[in-house]
Image (spheres, rainbow, N blue to C red):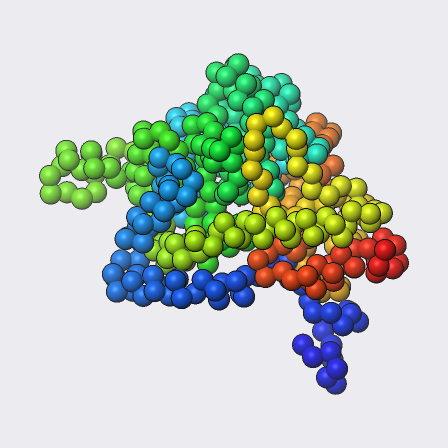
Length: 402
Ligand SMILES: *Cc1c(COP(=O)(O)O)cnc(C)c1O
């Protein structure tokens, strides 16, 4: 858009600065494109577009990068959760304790796998599952505990591991956002029975569409997930029926990964370490600019924990007074934001039959009303940061600079 050109100007933004989208990766994608293009050509030449050679290579590369004994590629983070829960033996009516503040799939995956989500509150500073609240939610029917590593850091895994051990629960991790996060050197998703990764485009390592993976050190879980993603097929069942290619003993689904997505991810993986460092620098730059803005109730706060943890900024999330008005003001000035998550899981209409009420999880409910995520992506420039932070300051003080 050329602001000096005659004619109608879209939107009410008189601001001269360029718009700042919530997410884009066009420029940084350009850098990885030569590597990606070579692999895309291979996919076309192979003539196998799903569950082919690039997917196998991607599973190996991801296992090496994360240190997982097994990585099983599937077609989304959500499917990874459903298949992981099924592979871990979730039975009809079994309860899984999950936080009330997370992405919808944290709870829907439990229902889709045949279980029942049981909600617990979050820690108000880290937004991750509160170990005390999680312990209070355990009943005689609870078989699993599924913390979520949200936005920029791990849940409190030492305390949550103790809760799981004390109650004999299987610990699984919704680590969809947590690529690169580690606890005592162990990658997220490998701190219990298994975990997942999402490669949805906005995630720290994003594909050009949907893709996901299950991470586990347990060969039986890996084998079951590998069968479930492909209509239940395993080498073992096929061995019983010589000459037949589709006998199954598990009722699986079609959740194979596309080779084009595997090609994109393989091409981007060598730049992931750099992307993680860049995200840390961007987060620090945001905090530096926003630290003294009145009206901002909280900036991202990394918990001080005994075990050595590696944080990764997936999202830069702040808490603000008059959140919805701030979101509109920023949108009017060309700045995209995202509200993660406007409705707590226990109040989602589709879970009404679980019988939860407003007021039960005050920290989760407060976070839903006050948090917003600022633009955060690999193409963000210093000028973009100045634009966003200047506007936030102007919204609360009427002035753009301190
Ligand atoms: C993104 C995300 C998912 C789902 O991943 P998809 O690949 O979008 O299906 C699940 N849980 C959390 C916490 C997420 O952020």
